Amino acid sequence: MKVSNLKSKPSIIAFILILLMLGSSLAYSFLQAMRPTEQEIEIPEKNIIDYALTVEQENRLLREGKTIIKFYHSLACLDCLDYKNLVEQLANDFSDQIFLEEIITKNSVENLPKITFMSYYKQEDLFRPTQEQLIDVLCDVMIKPPIACIRREV
Picture 1 (spheres, rainbow, N blue to C red):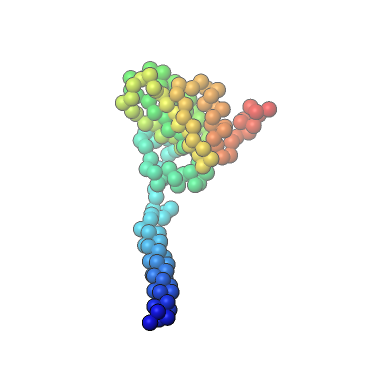
Picture 2: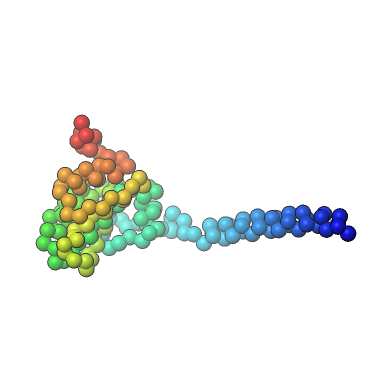
């Protein structure tokens, strides 16, 4: 009797492992089928928008090698207009690489403007930066920095 018990335990364990393997394969296939494809994720036509993108849209842009700039400001912020003009100029100059989100917040004016740079490599936040700091961080974060960035380093 003990010999038959020993033979059945490995069979049961093998059967359980086979079920787990099949179950995980089916679960993976199901999850992949439910996930939206790249074509289903729509990206706005303009590279300067006045709202926040979805996580899926941001991920698609980052996978495509784009740099996302999030410009957080409030309507009560007096200095924000200068910053807005500056980041819009950067977005226009490098429209093939930069996507700008202009987001109005209700945070205190002391914390604004906040500018977040995101790329596939890294993310950096700046609060009330100088123009030099903006350009330095942009050159550091961009995947394909322009020639002007390389000249700055020399």
